[in-house]
Length: 92
Image 1 (cartoon, helix red, strand yellow):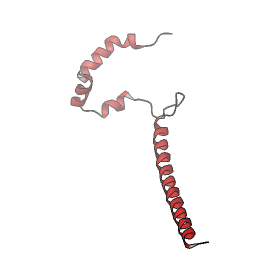
Image 2 (cartoon, rainbow, N blue to C red):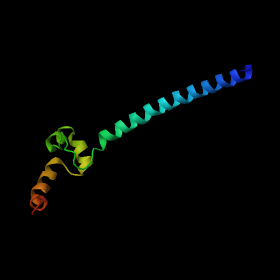
Image 3 (tube, helix red, strand yellow):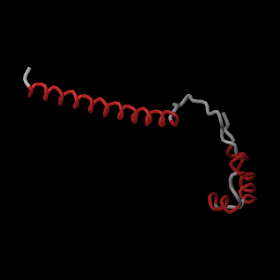
Image 4 (tube, rainbow, N blue to C red):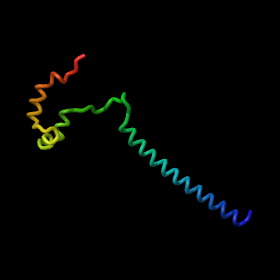
């Protein structure tokens, strides 16, 4: 084996090592992204452990935030809801 063969083998090993490190780094990034998305997209049969609670939702907002979001005061919203509630209930 000549000196130049040894140098090319060494360069090849170094290149392989660099590619392997890059592969492992990319693999870790892809795994993290997949993990993040899989927590959000669990499919149509997934049962939410924390279903929506209107009461909790209201407690997270002050009066100004409520009015900005729903364009009504909380009292006006409740009055409107009382008028249309029958139409919102499903009938089978």
